[in-house]
Figure 1 (cartoon, one colour):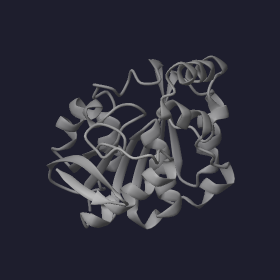
Figure 2 (cartoon, helix red, strand yellow; figure 1 turned 180 degrees about the vertical axis):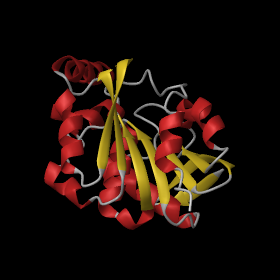
Figure 3 (tube, one colour; figure 1 turned 90 degrees about the vertical axis):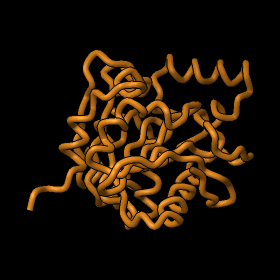
Length: 222
């Protein structure tokens, strides 16, 4: 399915029944990274797996900024009359989720931030050099984006009042303090470390986090 929002077209898949959860993929990916997880989530939730602008089957634009992508999802939620949604965002999708919650907290019920960073300086030295070298070789605007954004201050996330599950890999591309500092700054956040995993190995094509998501997002029994 497609919907026109914020000056572009977003492609998405909708499956399942129950309260809405929006899935947001990482840089250079599309919604299919969540396929294995979605099959399980749709038993309990209505799952909206979205391709971000300049990714997958969504519209191609000259604007690659995370703030714009967050406004895309704000428009998406409004266009589909979803009310408040749960968010599962990986990497760039986690950045978009966090910015959305900062700017439009009334649209978010809970969110899981997987492999999130607040600034380019959060990269480990080795990972930053890889992104820099790749951009210099390819001039890919998606790699330029990671070198320049996001620019989120820890003080700015203190206004995010919704429950947050922060997930990081033991061998992530970001420094470990990125995640511990974020969890400390957020009013209602918990941290889960995926032991033995790389930045994306626990989520792309995986359903390892399904039990965690069910426990986190499912409404409590009355």
